[in-house]
Image (cartoon, rainbow, N blue to C red; front, side):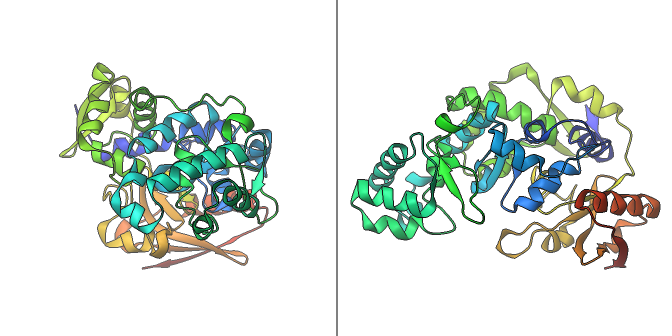
Amino acid sequence: MDLSWESVLAWRLRRQLLEPAGRLDAPDIARRLCGVQAQVPSAAELAVAVRQKRPKRGEVDKALANRTLMRTWAMRGTLHLLHPADAGAYLSLLAAARTWEKGAWQRNFITTKQIAALADAVCEALEGAVLTREELTAAVVERTSDAGLVEHLTSGWSAVLKPLAWQGYLCNGPSEGNRVTFTRPDTWIAGWAGIPEADDAARTVIPAYLAAHGPAPMPAFDQWLTRGATPKATLRRWFADLGDDLATVDVEGRQCYALAAHVDEIAATKPSEVVRLLPAFDQYVLGPGTKDTSIVAAQRRPEVSRAAGWISPVMVAGGRVAGTWQVNEDAAEVVQFGEAGAVDGDGLSAEVARIGGILGRELRLSVQTA
């Protein structure tokens, strides 16, 4: 089957509830998108809201408090909102890469012996408990007598805690103001089903990814998942195990995978002209990755993927990134990419009004071309 990028991108907009907005709640939106990146809580909240016909302010925090949504380190080692029903599957595939057993990781952080002791101490300390970072650090040092762990446990990067999250030993608890807390998913999260075997998890995660971000080549999936850390033989086996559930398609010369059940629907999807303003770190961009030139023009990648891992808020027109934007006082300031061509002005104005409604403020539109 030969497909066009116009049809593929229009189909993704539909699947990701961007055209039109849907009626799903925050946990189900996180499930549909294969997680919502949550390094910046306000961006995660907006990522949910722009996909809802009638967004409710504070819905993400409410779902976290109700334990119907969980926040933990997931894809690419970044914080995500995940639906508890399949969170374990995503974490299982991250754990399968065993990145903490590699020499380079251990030289920069801690040894496998230390991380095993850390895991035991964390599991014991968090059983039925919610602890701040400081409380967890004290509990770990008390149990391990390893003061060398303090520097790593108090680091804002939390590198030594990520492998524990991927193995299901901890997740975020409710925030205490600006202070993060930790707990165990098996004693905190409603519907927690544990961490399945990786091969079983792949049969959940790969179809979910392709249902939101497909058609896609195999390396794009792995870059989204682990930044390419999955052993290639393992990756090929996971895809092969899905058999006839997958189809290979040609998208303007690029060989990609799609769910077989979706191919005809994708082919029949008409190109979109809708204009959307998406928040920083939005899954529409992160799913295929900022290196994917079908989404982000190569010369514009530095404006989208910025220093220190920052992914800019973007304007999407016709399914492609056509600019960046930010809110500055009472203005939505849009920088349109000149090569993107004409953008529906009325559509952009309506989108600014919609964003203003979500944020609870009236915004005027300011546009410049770069």
